[in-house]
Image (cartoon, rainbow, N blue to C red; front, side, top):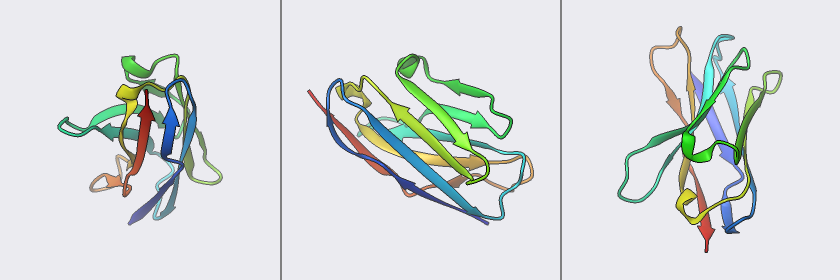
Length: 117
């Protein structure tokens, strides 16, 4: 079983920056993908960005050029650097872990990001 602990959310003004962190522990498979999803009130959860254990990344068009995902495999930690934040980035951000060897995905508890205009 894998546990995820997120940190770094908060309140920021439009144009500001935040950095989210997600530390994984437990039975972590070396081949995995970690990522960030977000869910705004009244909307479905959506993928923000993901990164494989090999370093391959993908991200939503809405955050390209503003958000950067990275990871430290030695620390089993994934980061989301969010720059030029917009009010529409306001959401609860969830960390996600998946592996082809795991029976199911693991989700973090979520961290609130609020961007004021």
